[in-house]
Image 1 (cartoon, helix red, strand yellow):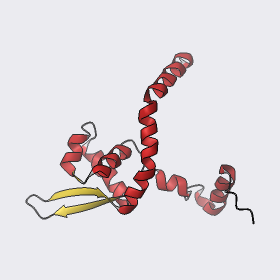
Image 2: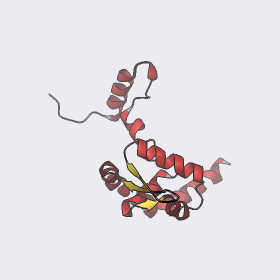
Image 3: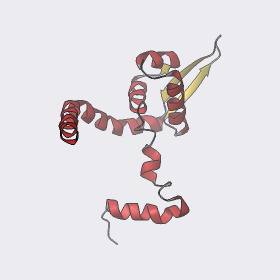
Image 4: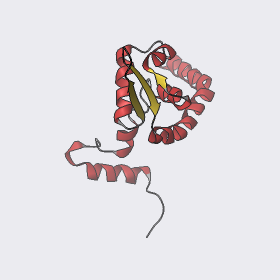
Length: 136
């Protein structure tokens, strides 16, 4: 038996064959990482990797996210098992968010991509400017 990993093409063909009528809706890669790479998810995961945060603290930490979008993003991350939500019986109730063990394990891998993005931001921005100058 060949122990080499399947190529990207082979994997996509397997996902497509297993998908049936749903196309690639059940693709494990697309399905699992879709919420991780959302506009706000990576920033929130980065914050929660440092320590638990209350909702209001997260709102102040990322001031350009709307309350609705913060709620939805946290809910999506919680649904996927990356984030734990704890409600404290105070008046009014306060809510704290933290990473689950799975969320921490996923973040350990994600931080390499985040570090790369931070270190290459200027290069990417310059590439976009060159592309836009030629495309317009």
